[in-house]
Image (cartoon, rainbow, N blue to C red):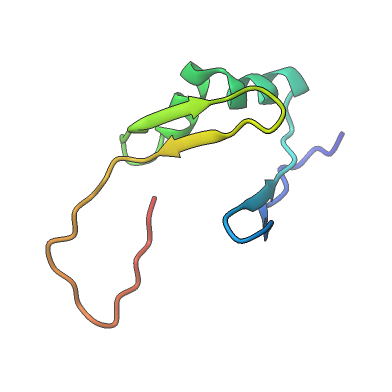
Length: 87
């Protein structure tokens, strides 16, 4: 197994989908659990700036889907040019 974390690779997969891949230096079972156990998934995605997912759903079947919705932030003012960074 690789001893380093490898950068996230993101590529388009159709008009409305993306494919993401990354190698983790962790036991396979722990990585699987962190992506399929809702309590762990919420912790993983909720570590940034103290926010939590508004919606966290995982359909664990062939053809199933993840639905991860971050909390909504309302922009009250906008300046041009705008560079929007989420996270």
